[in-house]
Image (tube, rainbow, N blue to C red; front, side):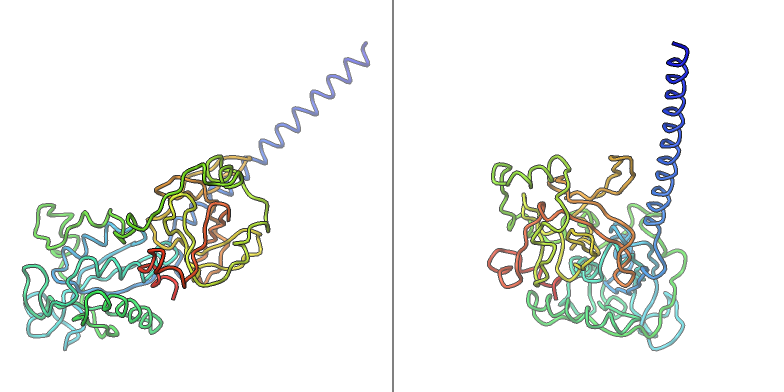
Length: 355
């Protein structure tokens, strides 16, 4: 009996020691994951990009872009004038345009998306006039610092010209940018009822209004068993089993339930993990993230924003030249729409994200 009691005591002690060890190990794992998530929320220097947008009175343009997810900083100023220096009183003679410097996190929002927002809030055919403001200082223009951005700007402008015809928007390399007076910085934050020629509420509405028209919703009963398990029970498909893992044709990936666009082929890459991987969503407002504490880990779960289905997780080990993020997505939650079929299926406006 004594020997049995001793054995039981030893067993209990070993169990307690192992339990403490596991808890400690998990705590360390949690701390590590928390640190990774905190780092992922910070903007890496290589991911911060800048574009300069002239769209009439800069108070409204700045106010709008301050409300866009992925924009990290804005400043008002005067761009591409005849002189290297100016101020509000002299921009008519120096020919500067009221301009907003927009700094954004390319891992969260693309330049294409920034520009689609820009065209949403301007009249791109109006010459030297936006809203009630008239004059050369209120002209529209997109000014870039990096030559690599010129091709993207041209692509989006070509896309918009098919809708509007001839555009009056300048597409130029930045020649100069003079920071505006403090009075003009964050003007609508300091003066909520101040003048604004832009409907700021548009910033919270879907970027492409045709979304609602083209979505042909499926029902849960239309889904196969694996898709239902992944999408609604947050299960994970086995790696290397989804046909979409090796799908590299040009096109878009849509929510299998709502058929809403979520990812584009241009942002897909082979991560070697066995699941379809993307560097970012097709639009920043198409997905949402939440903390996932399952399986003794802390991860950032990715869900479709409107349908709330489970998609996968996002990690910080993606390609640095694509922003450093890896959206690891279950193929069972997605449906692929080839580029050639996008017009016929109502996704023509999303082609700009595939080119």
